[in-house]
Image (cartoon, rainbow, N blue to C red):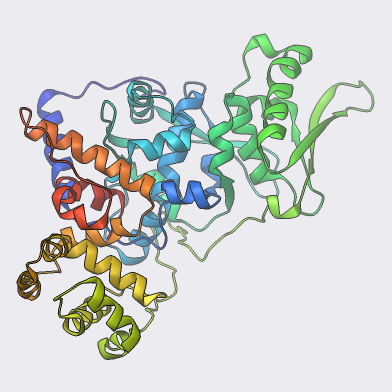
Length: 465
């Protein structure tokens, strides 16, 4: 299929794809090494970023708008750790896993938080799915611009407003993400603020190509026009290219990035023709960390070869040692806060559960309270009403059911994140019971049992538990 052309899927194929998506949505997701950089906690308390491979930084395709590229970056940032995990464990072959993220998180990463409708994101997903793009890259030690043609995503599903976005990368993209090669740190908050497609591309090119010793990048003017998608005839005159492309991109990067850049022209001595552009980096060296190269996967013969060190699991203490972290004074306080609750037995149950699910507890009292209120919120509420006998049912529950892991994970999120999931639960309740108003619920852990089951599947896809 030629670049930019769209393929209409026959109805039968569409039904098969929909069925496949439902199956994969229900499948458990792998545990990633860290929380997705799209998560609201990272945006509120951290500096969300991800390592992007060089080949996907230097994408050449005039049909991809800045919105298309921002959506692609959000997808890559969310999925990159899981791609590496799949490559290391062999749990999923390249191009077979369906990824998911809250639409709200994706829009935040794109700088589209004020947009209620997802219509533009839907159009961007279709563009990514229907286009064959050209990857342009500068080979090490060679200034010649090379090209490679691949597809990006093979499946997508975007809700109208609230909900979860699903997608699947092509096998070629996942191989690129998992093979050994240069990766450069890209700041998502900077990308979200860049509104020009030129500045969006130039920022990433600078992150990838700036020499870490000379703090500069010299590039042929013609090649720069290509990688910035500014090769149209209207930019043939230098004044037009500088005014409408170069200065726009540099000014916007200097406004939002953690560093500043300036540029100077390199002229041919005899003709004084502008042949190259040299970008000079100005700012703290920490804002431009060096490339990371592995250890990842290599592909010397055209097939993936696993070249990863053996995974080492951190040993967990025995349950008795885990329970021993809660002393006599803490247990006495719990007996006052939870009248009639068999605190000692519940602590033993908590310790066994945490060890079985390999849950760390740097602050044991806080983790225990979160566990108790999240998994037994209904019993906590009934006991507050005076019926302490309900605690006898706590030990008959199958706490290995996914819904309890979801409740516990949600209990560790900030209020803003919980609010997003509660909004989705209300939406799903309205769809399921259109003539009934959803009971009043709060963001408190003790109310999780009333609404978390509604969003269990979506939560497990967006936040592996």
